[in-house]
Structure formats: structure tokens, C-alpha cells
Length: 138
Image (tube, rainbow, N blue to C red; front, top):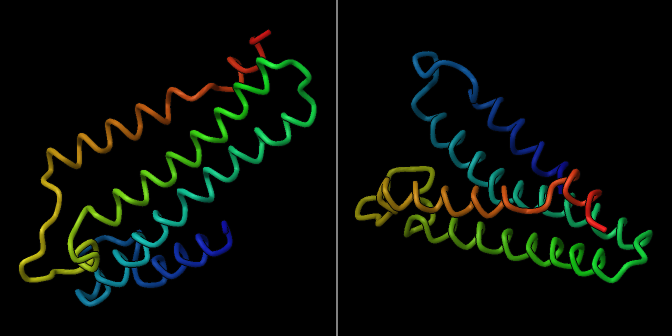
């Protein structure tokens, strides 16, 4: 999964991502935005899969029931966060192409709705147990 994400990031860089807007061809803006949109949709799963993988490996060495409950909760929350993030990204603009190009009559989230989405996602993701919290649980 991460290889696919890196391929889209590379495509965005090749199209001009990272350069000042004054040096970009206007036609490249759409390609960069499309590649970054795909990167974000897939990148969420790469990140969630990494966290879930660590939790699955810890399940192999954990003996206590409390550890198992916490670790299965982390795995379930990663699945839920990945789904919620992708659903939100895909319904953020209708039609979906409006996320990376101008579409006449497109309906997108307002800036206030985008801030609320970011607040909920970051707040939920930040509240997952961190390494130090997991090792201190007994």
C-alpha cells in the first residue's frame, strides 16, 4: 500500500508539487491536486494498517486480558477511522472530481465544515493510546 502512495506522491512531485505556484503550468494544478487526493485516500489506509499491524504483533506477546481488550480496541478504531476518513473525503465534494478540479455547480463542504471535520479526525486520532500509555498499563 505504501508503495502505491509513494508512486502518487512521486507523480505529484513530477507534476510540480513543491514548486512555487508562479513556476507551475496551470494545467499541472489539476494533476497535482488529483494525485494528492488519491495519496490522502490511500495514505490513510497505509497509516492505519501500520498501527493495526503493531497492535496485532503485540497481541501475540500479551497475556493479560486487559492488554488484549486495549489492543483489539486499537485495531477496531483504526478500521473505523480509516472508513470514516475515506467516506468523508469522498463526500466532501459532489461530484468527487471537484476535489481536484473546477466543476460547474459542484457542492463542497464549507470552510467551517472542513474545520469541524479536521477537528474531529485529529482529536479522535490523537486520543488513541500512545506507546508510553500502553507500556504503563498493567
